[in-house]
Image 1: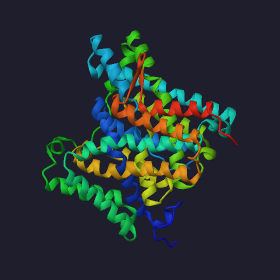
Image 2: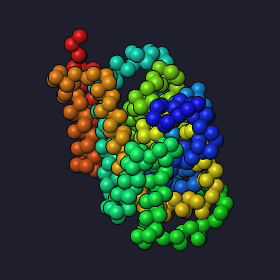
Image 3: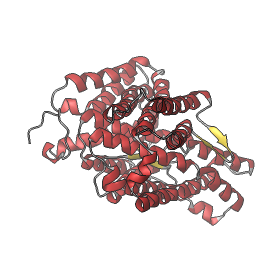
Image 4: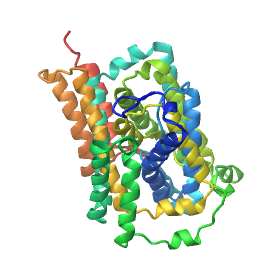
Length: 428
């Protein structure tokens, strides 16, 4: 096979094992910063997070017939749920560490809701259900996903703009002017060069690496929900479930947006084959299993969609290699420490490009489907989705409280867009 790395590659095997391995590493690095950030914020195990990101991704691929090039990493949508459960538990005399297994049970129940929506797709068919998710809704949602993530990228960049700009510059130069393999691994090269720059700028403290062991188990028994089952507080258990389960409504809508983004990026309709019902079941299974062992909820990762868009390598085998790398490294605390001390500015610089690429995919989705913005109906739907998603994100702390739980800006925007699309019928 002759490849100039300019055309889409759906079978990467002719590239050779070495190149496929490098591509897999690039996908692992792309998801790493965001994936480990969730346990860093919540107090969950970083190693367990890596392990079940890898296992969850492989399970997702198995359920989706090995066809969808998606990586599953930690979901940010559930951060509010974890915080709510910890706050409730603290008032009842529990420590945050004791509260997290209760939150994980809530996440497990949330994962089961994916099966319900998958059943609707199977019963009524994708086309009928997707009448509620036309491009005028999914396009702005995809755009909003990238834009709402942009704040975290900028925040990371502010720790050292020079290190961040080096990451951006390396990615741009490699992607536009690079030759051969250099052009296909811009993210990995951006991470490595920027990381070295961060070391030179004194942004890296290697003390955690020296103190970390080479080999260790990814999780402990007290981190799993078994600790709750041994001594259950029924009131806290029910409160945790009611606080976290509704968040799944938001993540399922985001999942549909991510599947649309991946389909648009690769030029293949994964909503039809293997079908949204399968991708939802895969996502739900990954989330439920991860929560059983004290790892955060999983979700399809926009960062890796950005990598697909940059490299034009759409072979799911590469994603599965990334998953296996994540599983292997979850047993190495020293490597986890190396990644954890990666300069925040490096993560920020890489994220600037990836998050922008996600939004660009949303724009392309609108253009390719020829959404008519001379139609006031379409303008209103798209405008409200974008304004609500970004406005609630940065103007209301990214959450609107509703009873025991809260809805993120993206969830509110998606729900409003879906409802408006159903009410404001398009003139044929």
